[in-house]
Length: 171
Image 1 (cartoon, rainbow, N blue to C red):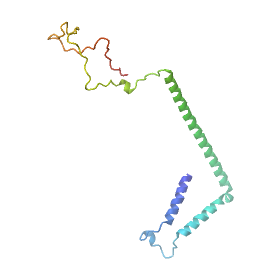
Image 2 (image 1 turned 120 degrees about the vertical axis):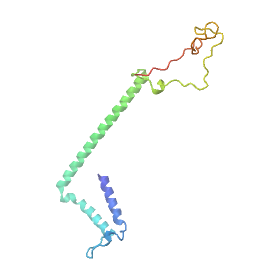
Image 3 (image 1 turned 60 degrees about the vertical axis):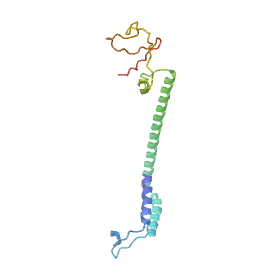
Image 4 (image 1 turned 180 degrees about the vertical axis):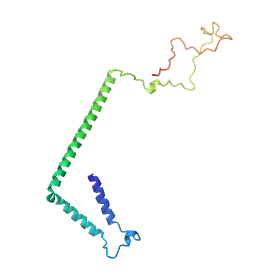
């Protein structure tokens, strides 16, 4: 509120000190009307400020009520600041507790991230698992060649090498 009063005061002062625009509606003042100069306006403003300093001597009841209002606003601002500080402190304590639980190894439920759920990257030049020509399995038989009517089979990885399955996505 006080900020707005200060802005209003300074803007008024700037507008009073600006030169008048000629040719506008205010330039055609009646003959009996007196124009106010910037110096007169400044002296009037300074006398108004000096008069405001003696306001409490003339209106003591208004000053008492104003002081009580300022005290009430200060108390409410202090209570609001305490509430905000306690809320922020509780949030910080909660985050520290969660971090300590994660560090201790306690899994708080679903710990998979989007990166964990994405399939592993395979480059364009990744070699396929090679099967030696003389290897035998149930699809090719003992000759290493598939029968003419057998469906094409996927390459079988060498023994001891498991094919990883993609991770299951949560439902």
